[in-house]
Image 1 (cartoon, rainbow, N blue to C red):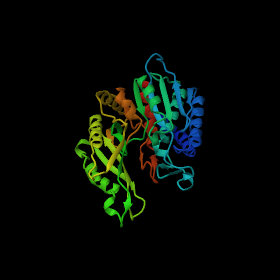
Image 2 (tube, one colour):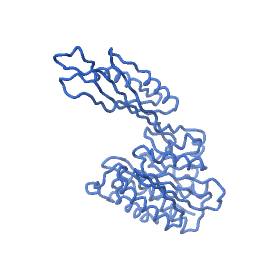
Image 3 (cartoon, rainbow, N blue to C red):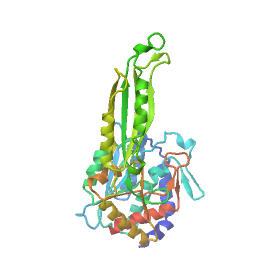
Image 4 (cartoon, rainbow, N blue to C red):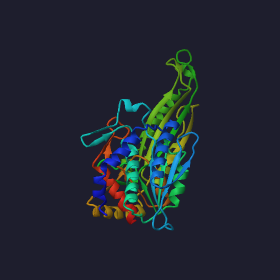
Length: 377
């Protein structure tokens, strides 16, 4: 089967599904909105004769899973991961409308990552139309809270991954089209300093300045960054004090941590928990930790990439691999020892930015690659 020709001939079908998805705005924090796009995808899956499961959620959008049968029902499935929540609030379409021009598709969430859902739905449609059965069962999981940390979906993601032979995280590709075979782990910490309030004029000497206490630690924390190790630490926000004429008794900083290796996350945790107050009478309190472990490039991941690269070459596609500092749900599956590849989605750029877009030409290419994986793995 010439999958690339098939999807090139049916490119308009992928675009039509994507247009419908983008026009259902679905910010992570709006449960009703995310539920609407989840319901749309569930309906599309049912039309394709997939078996659909809904996992109701209380605080975030519902999660949707589906099974697609194969010729080898006893084999472990290939798991496809998606998230349908976006960073864009309802109403963004008014200022950032769906558009198709100059070989690009634009709109809120078009790249991150509704194009991926459109590609998958079009791929299943092609399998159905051509009476082609995948080599393994296909399990699709659509989650609703990836952009806000995946707290509600993590357990489900990990449970599904443990039952799978291969995980394909359908996040967008790197800007050059490369798949992602490594991602940094992500952590967040909050450091709070407690001092003693006093009048800044009459009783300055009686106060303990919490902001001053934090100032001693901010420079030290920033210096923990080690680019050679792929470890970065960023003090992103600082709050504290009530008025300029009051010695502040409390101040806090929020710290972003990115690591390539799990061992570095533990090293950094120790460094932060070992911080001691500098000012006499001050007190420190640290909280937080690693919320997404790193996706390290394991032998299983390297082997899976080489196999997909070979399938791509048969389609005339030259696939490359790369790493990124951002996290995704692949960060949860790779540490389980399951072969995981990320970045199978569309090629484009500017995720979370006003120029978010997808290259139209990449849609049939990525659908053809997905079809080849599902039918040959």
